[in-house]
Figure 1: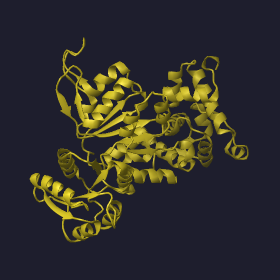
Figure 2: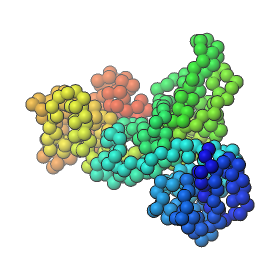
Figure 3: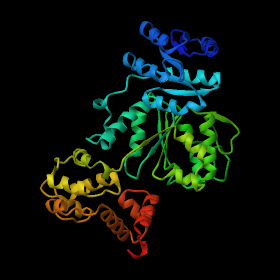
Figure 4: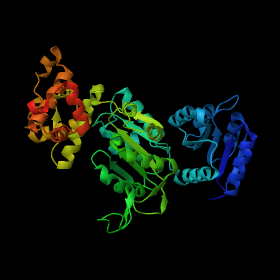
Length: 450
């Protein structure tokens, strides 16, 4: 590591300053010290600093205030906070405000050096603004809804950090797209983005898929196999439907998150893995914890920062925009003239509850384009594609239908079409098996009688 890289340490504890200075100097860094935040600000304004390490709680100006003031003239400066265990919530708030990460006191000197080296090595260019966002973001965040704009702002902040992120939301809202966006906006953007579907992978295979195995570990292990966690080294690991993992796997995941080391099945060698862990669930993990289905310690390891993605029915003002976006994308990919979305079709789309969320909207739009005539997408084309028939847009305005009843009828139709097979009905709707099971119970539907 080049000695030209300068690190500013801000802490009112002189002993901490001396200990950290000794550690960093021995690792080849140039160190500048400040005993309070105001002195630290003066140093930032007059000298070159590549990274700032600050205590959270200090007399006068706190670490959080230092972060806000420094961000005005040094928005790209990496911030690493030191915090006592009792002030972890403050440190999490700091990450949301733009800090890179935090370490709890007492901290291991080697962990501090490794984290600093990782931050400086991966420090990339400034985060792009909304106008320069990769196109993959367009499916879920653009529009007028305030909650989605706030979500995107939080995504940009956590993308600069390596703290574990838990994504919450119903099936089909775009959790994998959000995870991918965090990866694309992060310093790890040029490294692997590995997706693990914990919901569809049988529990007996998940251990080998995640951790890999050594040759001869079991009957069909004819060669060494790298697991998905190992494949995500230096990149991002996305654990989808994390609520479905077995108790045994929860223990293994917890150990990995605690020491960032893995051991392949049947192997004695440990491997150190550096990856950003993002997980997602459409279930209530707090309820699962109460009922003993999910470990509380694992939950808090996964949920350093949690982001909730609202369902499509709660952001109806974005539906016309998303509809036009899906039309444009599909027509371009198919090499056909762009189809017109009539105003009454947009109004109709806004009335439907979309139990399958953005995924269901995308599928319905694409099916409607295939079935429409004369390049005009009408409500009846969406009905032909499998959506329910409702009155025309004018009548619908006067007699709006019940969203819950509409959703119930949609579930029933999917079950009829799949002859009562819940897995097939879930695939038709673009939702998970667990989600359709919940909705069947919620609406009191008897699958075999539909």
